[in-house]
Amino acid sequence: MPGLTLNNISMRFDLPNGTHVQALRDVSLHLAQGELLSVLGPSGCGKTTLLNIVAGFLAPTSGEITLNGHAVRGPDAERGMVFQEGALFEWMNVRDNVSFGPRMAGRSKSEYLPEVDRLLEIVGLKDFRDKAIYELSGGMQQRVALARCLANDPDVILMDEPLGALDALTREKMQALVLTLWKETGKTVMLITHSVEEALLLGERLIVMAPRPGRIHKEYRLPFADLGAEMDLREVKKHPDFGQTREEILSMIWNMEEEIMGHMETAS
Image 1 (cartoon, rainbow, N blue to C red):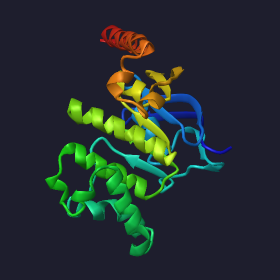
Image 2 (image 1 turned 135 degrees about the vertical axis):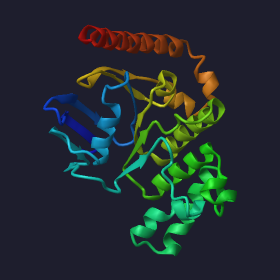
Image 3 (image 1 turned 90 degrees about the vertical axis):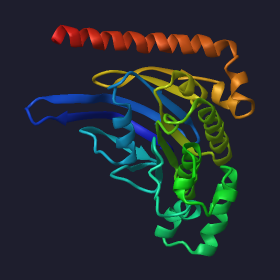
Image 4 (image 1 turned 180 degrees about the vertical axis):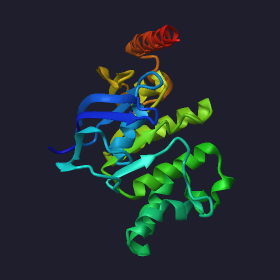
């Protein structure tokens, strides 16, 4: 089946003292080509573990992931990752960072440089292509990370809290950029965030995960990402359903956190 499919993914971590942590249990979902999914949940619900399994950094204890009909067995250029902090090469300039993947793939400079420059223009860094990474702000570094990911032309873009360290204004601008890139490239995107508001803005599909063992608690299909690709995000937040859905999800996660704390107090 085309797209990304997770079939009964479970993950158990065995600890040195003989106990274990069941991080995920029987997580199943399918993302069609071009879908944008945001993933929310309380701390410890396995969001990042799930993303690392999809990326191929971790092998699940049980279950299978397929992408366009073939099994995911490890990291591959078909799945690109954008981390919370850019994980950029500090000794390279902006252009060399973005072109790193195509160079490693053996593509000729005449082939990849026009595409790299096009991506730098899209993310607003055309005039900064020769700058060192340390000369850039945090928001600009995340733009480089996005462009570097896209330069590899992955089928799926995985994003682990990519905007979490940014100030509010820069974060809003980057949210708008993510939506623009999603619409322009048609890539499948899976984004992990702790922000309910961000998950609403950046997910045409949104799943809320319940904690341990991590599993899908509820799924939403939302209009806000499509709206945000066409209009100012502040206007999107005024949509009558936005505030209502935000409060519903906040209450859901709050109750989960309260339940976790109650279990911890009982155990102690």
